[in-house]
Length: 162
Image 1 (cartoon, rainbow, N blue to C red):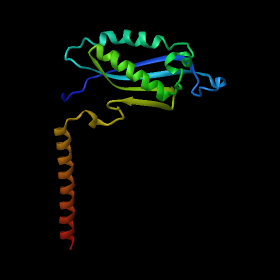
Image 2 (image 1 turned 30 degrees about the vertical axis):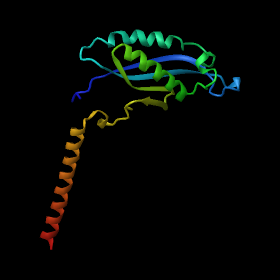
Image 3 (image 1 turned 135 degrees about the vertical axis):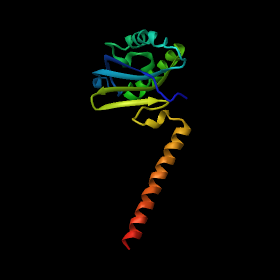
Image 4 (image 1 turned 90 degrees about the vertical axis):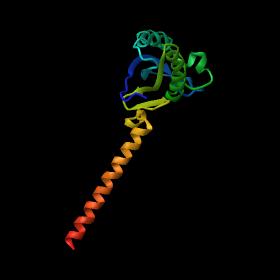
């Protein structure tokens, strides 16, 4: 595993309508959906990213300006953020893999305060997602040593004070 982590972050927006309640057509409403993807290359040369914009443009063009419920894939499942995210993730995971890339995570949101995240390794601010076992073990040993040094110092101070 590389010590340095390199990745591409892609963001796509599209306007569409959806109705998460399949049996009530009056609930149809519009959103500007935001989709973010975190992608790494599976090879060492930087060539895969060149096709990614085309892959994304082709994929999301089918969702722009439509009623998502009318797509065959959403005929029997409601187009919620979660269901859309699952479908986008699985479809794009295959498309990126064919291009020598790996989709690690996908986020989809329809409001400024809520985003649904899905992926093999969710990017939720944890630096440990990409650390190998030796790095984690070394970190734990440093913490243990620091803790033991603090305990020893407190014991010394206690002994000196009595």
